[in-house]
Length: 276
Length: 285
Image (cartoon, rainbow over all chains, first blue to last red):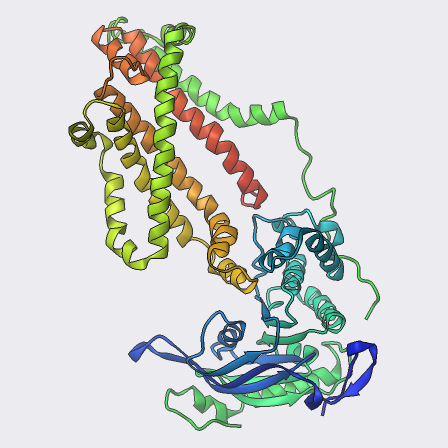
């Protein structure tokens, strides 16, 4: 069980995870890239749910279909079979590369999704200012992305994703290219923003410690084909530190499970019954 | 969690990120110096060849005499009339080429089958010397403005279409993905992401297109001469007929200068501004 304080409506009350509404549903989803002999199964009958306000981390080696899964949930690509659902407002996707538009200023980048959603000009300006403040970049509105450091760019990308007005954030190894110190800071900021904006986050990483540091739950995926092989509840109190003993211990347990030889066999192209 | 975090461990502070900007005069001097040096070398070699007496001076006059002639011609009203007609053709032909090349290129980026069918053909057209189109152009349009425009457009449009194709190919797919996930769809995605992302590459196509259209135009003006429409090409040709070597070279200098001016001033400045804005120039200055 993973109790969390839910502050919707101003009345703080304790809710069990199971009582909260579902934000993301993934049911028996498979994805095959290519056809015939060249077909590669990226995802094989994956299913899980993410509740509103949860941070769920997906961990797996490269080739486990993590990015594919986020693309499917974001609606950029259809699944080969199975069903996907996201509650209200759609999703925002963030990548390892901030993918800022280099021809736009910081403020214009954040404004981009507001344009897509036809927000009135005055409201756009106000929202951009608000979001830049949220990611501590107030003074950089008129800068071009190339003038910022990597961590600052990733924060602009976060502000832009939040401007997309969706409460479901899909993050594809967003901090993998940053140095450890910057990453720690962004973990703290993300935690704070998720609480402040009541976001639901699906966070993909190959770093087990990062997953345990951030997640309410950690989903473990096997590689080629990508399958959900285990799920861990992270019952550690927040704020957490990535260096803490508790995080390290749980991370070690997750890693052990990841390296379990039973899953090595899954790498063979022969169909193996799903381990649950 | 601390209540407020400083912006970043190493913030490029708002006023110190850019190096101090030198004065306009200095920047201009620094930028122009290599070009002026090269020009001096060319003029020197030219002068040396004339001085060697390899050809008599009435066949190959020196740079001093030719530049004096350029100055003299530029003081004549006739010259400006010819320049006006030639540049008018250049601008009109180039604009048509941008529209035609742009539309064809755009269609080919959208439709894979169109590209596989006609992609090779546009590249082939690019290698076709524009002067080879003139017999056909004259057959179709007689000796008139449309014949010249026809060849200018055919010369420039394939480069522009190909430039657009290359530019779109080189767009980082991640930017398009980001645009889509941020709600840009269909035409909006094109206008707000694909076009600006393709712009740096497309400028190369536009530059090449200009070079081709200017070349085609000069070929055209030498071949298709219209009596009451004096042009630079016509003046060049007349100089040859009158064995006026000084005039001939003077007109060549004018042709070269216009081509360079459009390339350097028009494209150079716009391109530089765009690259600077996107941080693509960096320290390689």
